[in-house]
Each structure stands twice: as C-alpha cells, then as structure tokens.
Length: 125
Image (cartoon, rainbow, N blue to C red):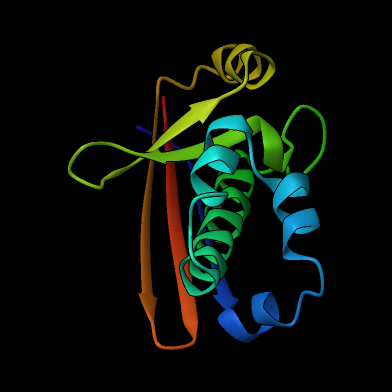
C-alpha cells in the first residue's frame, strides 16, 4: 500500500546559476554522494546536483512533511546500484521516523530532458 508519493521538477539553469556549486553540494549531499560528486566534470556535476536535489524534494514530499526534522537533504542519499538504478539510503534518524510511520519501502525514479530534471518518489507501507 502507498504511504505517499512526491514529485519534483528542476530547471537545470537554476543549478547552473548557483555561484558556489561546491557549497551547495556540501549543503544537500550526504557523504557518499559528495564523494561521487567530487569526481565529476562540471557538466556532470551540475546534472548530478539537480537530480539529487529533485530526488530529495520528491522524497520529502512523499513523507508529507517537506524539509523539517528529521527530513533534511543531507540525511537522504540517493545512490546508484551497479545497473544505475537509484536507491534511497536514509540516515538512522529518518529510518526510525519512517519505521514509526509504518513505512517499509522507498522508491525513486529520475529522468532528464534538455533543461529539466524530474524525480518521482513512492513510500510504501
């Protein structure tokens, strides 16, 4: 059964316009994501930041809370498995919170087309 769904759309131009992409990355990315980001070219990094932010927004919307304790961007990591599928890794605080809500599964889908990046998230009980 579905607990919540969320979606977010990012205009890549907004990410390009960020003056300090490194500071933005440190603000929104978890440790494993940050390691991946630091090895990317500028264009890859811009796309990655946009997708990660869209994913985190969509997940926060699926919780129904937006970004407020314990749901914070750095506490949600969206990693890719060997086939490239995005997988969600929550912090211990979010795991406990989700468990209290009866959430048993989380899914996210990411896509891009020219200047737009989109994420769709589902939380299930």
